[in-house]
Length: 552
Image (cartoon, rainbow, N blue to C red; front, side, top):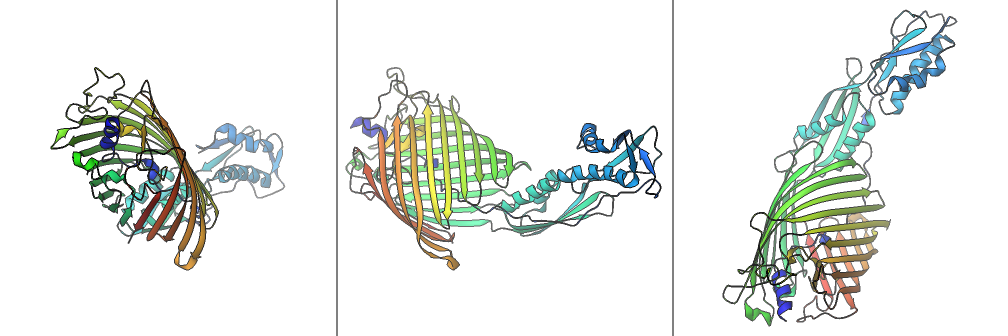
């Protein structure tokens, strides 16, 4: 019983929600081309007498003005025009072959011409005019700064101008949540080989509010959770985001504030965050112990996409955070939990390096995330009270790896198959704040939140959302959702493993969705295998879980 208290009491009020609670990424249509190109022809002055019957023999072509293609590249497309007599028309075909090479690679505003010259020893010069973007004219309706758009397009509009690269940048902006609509026109400038890009942008709604109601918390602190989220994704006009969330149960209060700001034109972001959570055990009979805990988290994260396309993204990042928890019981006595000091405190600092990859189409999405975490001795990391007598007590020094995968397949309108997997591997016993959690909402349903906490673990789930009623004009759909969940956990080193190390359930859900304004879901899950100790008669204990989300 003492071990159960030490594990359950310390963690339940303070453990942050698992990343597994994130909603699946839905398949979305890829953006159509927002770019209209007015035909642009590079200057092509002609040479030589207009007598088409006259021929010349070119031994070699010399090229000037080329930066994209090497001399060898250009010689390969003109080799058929050397070493034999050429008519004036065939000479122009050699010039056109160079132009076509540029066009085939997307440099449609570049071209070649043969300037006036006197042929010397069979040598003819072909000049290349590589297109440039002279100006980007931005018109924005809304508070988004024109420089936000201009800087990202200028990056793609370098010399020589590559239209597919520019189109890709426009499509990425079209997918940007800051932008509702974007259109562009590429036209010729009065200056030779120069072009003007005219862009019109309609800014998207930036302020969002959400009201949440569910029974996702552990019944020991009150399973019914109420919450509100407020966010502005473009607070200053430069794409910076402020997000505030507040969640409450009968035994806990949880507030979190995050600020994210773009730091470069490659969509790198810097995020700083703070979270404060207070909780107390209110469930009988443990409530007589007056167990309560405080938790704070300070974090700073840098994320940088290293490959972006309308259908794919690969990003890496680094995050450092400091977590503080303190647990007390009775009249403020320190509760000596797992890895804590004599005052019931557990302070840990963690350096995290993560990698994310997403690929999507109109019919499916695949997403993977990998994270390497190092517990570091910084900012007052706690020394456990029993570190000298307990060889398996965890401290703030550790290494672990987390992996997550998700596959979402759209088989028909509103008919989704969702598969998820999560894995954690730790090199030693770790503190409860970093342990792998099983049980609860969006996890192994049918068991309480955090029913199983271990150093290592694997979790998998399958669900199939099948529409049974739909009103397309109102974007309203009702779905039944059969699902199955399974997870197993084990400890590192010589730490004993739990007697029940695997949780599994199957169940059926009913989901109602009304656009992006309202969603509700009710699940019933049937536990499989051995039963864990379940105190009380809560909805979770009976296999029922619900969520209600309102976004006015």
